[in-house]
Length: 226
Image (tube, rainbow, N blue to C red):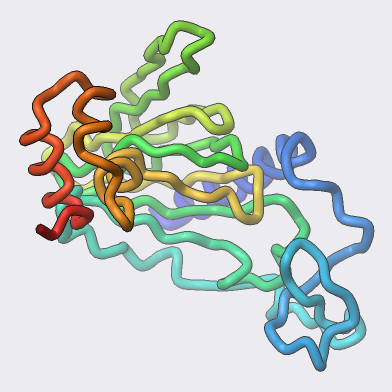
């Protein structure tokens, strides 16, 4: 089973690298290992200082621990483990990143967007219902599909998408993203959990519901503490 998992990771990274050229700018050097200490830096690229390339080593381009399941005991029943420049400094400027997504039975990765990346997801174990919604210009069409082990699905850049575990057992997926810093905007958290809160009367009119419903949702997501 581990062999399947790591084969999926390899495929995802290869595909993510293929689509990365449309998003993050192409680097003008072989690599830029990110460091936080400007005194040891030789150049500043993509928001990070670069280690002197002569001091780079193989450990700068590697990490471990993706064989460890994430804790899914939470409100949505899922856990996302990001592999970005915080875990692999050598990813800086390369335009790719990776995530491991663990799902409890009937757990979900709620509707969210990645403003700077397309995503390609492969199911390692379990059965997932996945989908995305097109833009207003395209009529907000829902594209959805049930995925089984070994199936792959692509989520276009910036569009709202989601995953849901249909099974009674845990599920696991790996996703490659075409940015070193794809960003994540979880819709409910952003709308109802903003700090300070968005005016509830405004949201009530936007969603065409009573203000009391908005107040309840804002309390659920920690924005309205009154």
